[in-house]
Image (cartoon, rainbow, N blue to C red; front, side, top):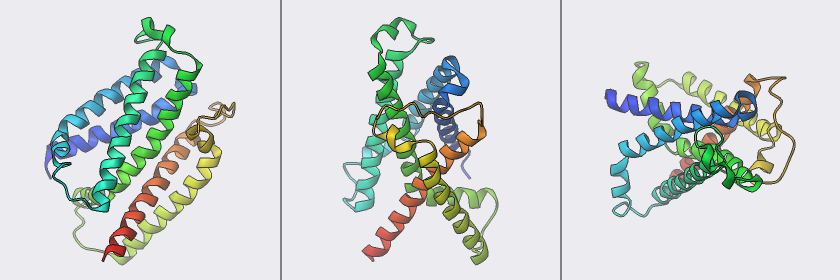
Length: 223
């Protein structure tokens, strides 16, 4: 397998991990939050540099439902990341403290809103590319033959993660965060740190699951 391609995937998953670290603000504190966010944005830039040719194919691409959905999700993810970047600079206290006077409560709310929407949209983005990711996994582990048992186990795991993701959405109050409603119901990191990350990963897994099977249904409906 192409080593550059593997390096790109590694950078992408590190960026996703940094997003999760950024969401744990009340555990790690402001400085780590800002450093993680800065590193994530640098990796997002690297991702777009690696995938710059894809943007040139948009105008020439076929106007199929899947292609339009991919373009729309990518556009939403870019907008969300730009909102995160701008609000990050405005409310920064460590890396760009000279701008902190421009950031208030509303800017912080928008920043939080964009962060949780980024988690959801990124999961959808990954769900659209899940067949490719599974192909990479098969190549890495040298799996060349299909297996009904393996497929059943993987699907069962996916269902369990999706169900956990529904529960996690309520545990983290995802609906209130995506709607930018003011709430004091934040995760208590003194009780559990691992639990927070498990909930975030489960939520991402839920939206990846929904996206993958929605695309599968769309493909089946077309044929």
